[in-house]
Length: 104
Image (cartoon, rainbow, N blue to C red):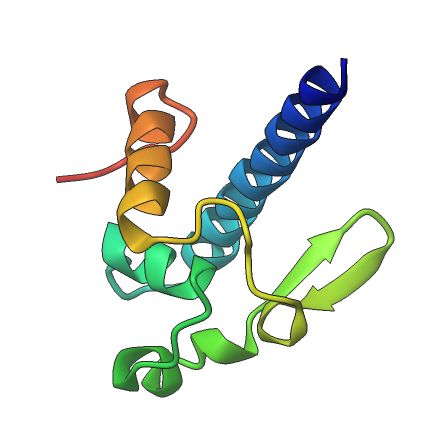
């Protein structure tokens, strides 16, 4: 029984992080005229602070959650989908399911 509860909490955390990836996609593509690469989305999700992220001010990204605005880089780092590879798989899955449109 305890294992089932633990697994349920893990799946719930994963769902929250998938929604966060979708929020990041929306925020980065909403008003930007520059090309956003999948790597950019994963880097922001992972809270990296590369030269490109600083130059484009992605580290100042504010997400709208319900009734409040959240500064993404002030939130705690994700504990689920932590590695860039796993986060990339999650993003690719969203593209495959047409939840994220990718232009080539």
